[in-house]
Amino acid sequence: MRKGFSLIELMIVIVILGLLAAMVVPNLTGKGAEAKEKLTCVQMKSIYNGPLDMFKIDNGMYPSTEEGLQALVRNPDPSKYPNYSKSGYFKDNKMPKDSWGGDFIYTNDDGKVEIISLGADHKEGGSGEAGDIKLSECK
Image (cartoon, rainbow, N blue to C red):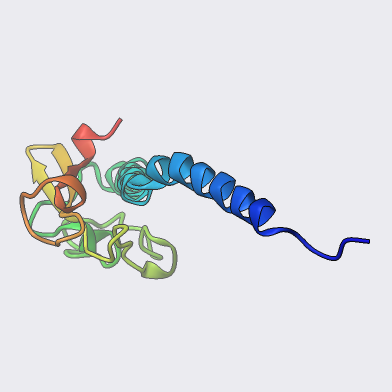
């Protein structure tokens, strides 16, 4: 009666596991960064299609660049925005962060709104995971 595996059998299993890992690992690398970029796009779209749109419906315009996304948390000018929602436009009045924990940048150029994430490095420019992500470029 046999009680265990021979060295050859163990080596075959190790080789098979190594081959499987060699095929799977390259497909998984880089997927984390790609997922963070996609999540950031989803967050920006939800800000644009939710709180920003509600702000515009209530007030007839988007906040200015100077007022920024903070205008969705606290009324920046009650005389300018008399129909401002009493509870703000974000749940729990918390500003969302991008996938890397950074703040979103908001611009309003005569009604053309842009939301930007500076990526992993939190600096303008860059490429790859450190590149900027713009709402207008999200698919």
